[in-house]
Length: 146
Length: 266
Image 1 (cartoon, rainbow over the protein chains, first blue to last red):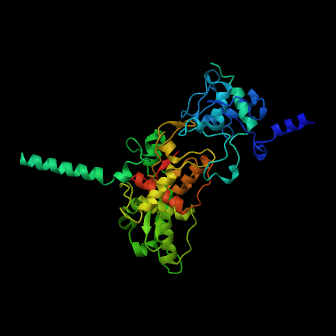
Image 2: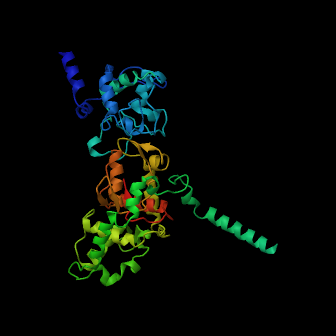
Image 3: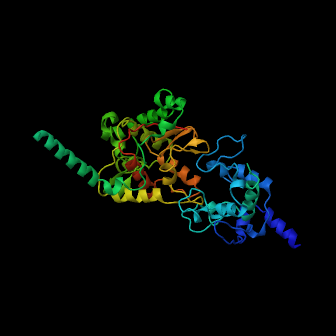
C-alpha cells in the first residue's frame, strides 16, 4: 500500500508534485550526497527531460552529445562527459542550487522556490523540476561518461 | 609652442570634462563592454536585405498605414495629427530619438505610443488606441520612421534621470523562476548562442519592429514581455511605469545609435 502510494506520487506531473512538501536535502562540501526524497532516478526519463526544451530547458544554454538535436546553446559547459567530470552528489547540488557555489552563475537553481523576484503566477512557489525529475536527470547525466 | 600648450590645455580640460561629467552613469554596470552593436549586426544577410529594401520590408506597410492615419481626422475635436503638426517629414524629424520623454503635466515619462495616445485623448478628443493595436503601431512606426538614420538622443532632462536609474535597476535585477537579469545575457553574453541563436546587446534601435517570429509588427513593450516570459517572470502590463522606465534606460544605453525603424528581426 505504502509502495503503491509512493509510486503514484512519483508519477504525478510536476505541478502536482510541487504541491507536495518538497523533500529537503543536506549539503556536504560541494555536493548533496543523498538522493532527494530517497528517490532513485531513471536515466531514460532523465534523457527525455534534458532534451525537452520546455521541461529541462538544458539545451537552451548547454550543448550535449545529441547530434540529432538542432539549435543547442553555447552559454554553459557541454554536457558531454558530465558523468565523468562530476560525482552524482556534485551534479545534484549543481542542479538543486548552483547559485550556492557561484552567486553570479547563469544556471538556475532548479529546486529553489525562495529568494526569487517577480516569478510569473504559473510558476510561483514551484521548482523548475521536481525532486523526482532532478533524480532522473542526474541518473542520465551519470551515463555521459565520455 | 604657445598654440601647442593651449591645445594641450584644451585637451586636458576636455578629458577632465569627459571623465568627470558622465562618470556616475556611464561607468556603472549595465553598459555593453565593447562597442555598441545593433541586432542588425547578428542578422543573416537575407534578413538584412528585407530590412534594407523599403519595398520588401513588411514594417513599411505599417508606416504607410500610419501616414494615412496622420492625415485622417479623429475624435470629436475633428482634428487630424496633420492639422496641428503639419508635414510629419518635417515636424516629426528626430522626435522618436528623444523618447521616452518626461511629461510635465502627468509628472512621469511617456513613451512614444503613450505620447500619441495623450495627443488623441487631449487634443483630438478621441479614444486612446489600444496597445499593440494596428493603428497605434502604425502611427508610432510612421512617427519613428521620420527619425530613420538619426542618432538616439535621450533628453538631458533631470526629471527623467530617476526614471532612467530605476530602469537600470530593473535591467540589473534578477527575476523570474529562472532568476536571470537582462544584464546577464545582454551585457555579459552578447554574441553567444541561446538555443542556437546569437544573443544581441539588446539595443532598441528599430521599434516598432517587424519580427519574423511574430509575423507582425510589435512594440518594444511587447518584446520586453517576451524576454520576461522567457525567464518566467511576471511580464509588466503594457505601458506600466516599470516598463517605461526600462524603455528609458535602454534608450539611454543605446544613445548615439542610429534609429532603424521599422527594423526587421528574426
